[in-house]
Length: 153
Image (cartoon, rainbow, N blue to C red; front, side):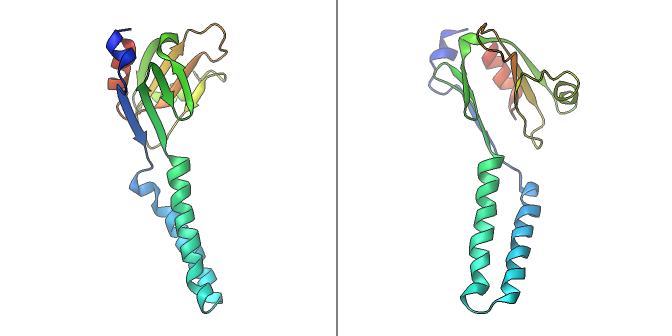
C-alpha cells in the first residue's frame, strides 16, 4: 500500500442514505396512522399523533437506512465495523447486475455483509488476517470503482 493511502486523514468517505422514493411508503403510513388517531380524538390529541409518528419514522429511516463507508486513519470503515488496511487482500467490484451471484449462490455465510438494496455497486474485499474467521467483506458503495482503486494501492 502506498504511504499516502494509509496516512491520509480521510481518503474516501460516503454515506449511503435511502433515496426519496424509499421515503414515500413509510412516511405515508405514518401520516395515515396519525390521521386515524386524529379522527377519534378532539383537541390536543388530534395533532399529537402527527408530532410523534412522522418524526419517529423519519428518524428510523435516517438511522436504520444509512451506512457510512470510509477509508481514514489507515482503516476501512463500513458502518460500525473497521479493519486495518494492512489486513486487506484482493478487491473486486460488482455492478448492479453482477452482484446477484455475489449475494446469492456465491456468498460465504461467514462473510461480513452490509448491503443496501437501493445502491447498485458493491465491493468485495478479502481479508488476510489468519485470526479472523471472516473471509471477506461485501458491502454497498456508490463510488465502488474509486474505493477499489484506493484499496488496491
